[in-house]
Amino acid sequence: MKASKIAYKPVALVLGAVSGMAAGALFKQTWKALGHGEDAPDATDEDRSWREVLLAAAFQGAIFAGVKAAVDRVGATTVRRLTGTWPG
Image (cartoon, rainbow, N blue to C red):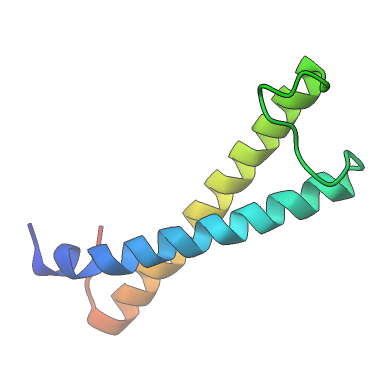
């Protein structure tokens, strides 16, 4: 394994945590903006419909994947600019 990949691991862990927090906040705001209330439903919330539970899960998954990909890409391009090598 290249030294650049090993050195990038701690950076990737921090970026993952940051992207998770950002995605969670973005999802919460998106869910509110869609007019579905404060909290998204849990899969076991019996007061919510199947449609609402699955819609929330789909939005949450899409937002988390998009934010994670964007943050990972920014991290990798920044490492390339600083070191001259791609970390992946």
